[in-house]
Image 1: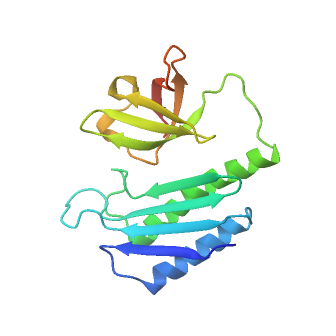
Image 2: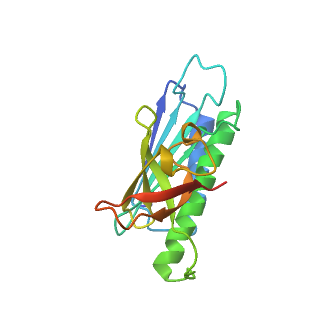
Image 3: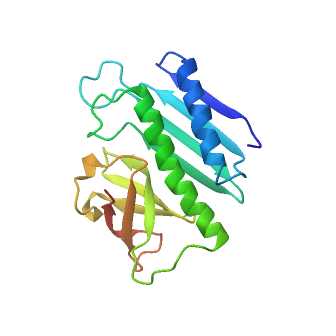
Length: 184
């Protein structure tokens, strides 16, 4: 890697075992993408007194030229009740690996084009208070949506980092989704 790993711990004690796991997983990512220019990892426990859900969250931010950013977040899903920190780290790297493989395939021109396939995006911002959010497509373009556009899931069940397919509302001036459906 051209830039060293940046590992930050928030509300979690620094662990040599987790640092070693992160380095091992990063080495694995570099086996199929050797031009990652930066990698920032945040290991955190956002809610110290939370009694349900996963107490840990791990976020990876990878930068790949020319101007691509891969963000993978694990530990926010409600079905991951009380996973060990090691499991959440592995899950975050698995998510990053899928995105990185897709990016390198696109950069090599290996991705097949399906005319009927719905475009894929990642939920990049959510505001539960206003019921609005933003998805970012694979080209880095932001598309706005609100709770009325979400199908198949409650708006409150969405989380930043989830993958989604969408249809775009061409009648709007700004990029706006007509429908947003989270991928399982």
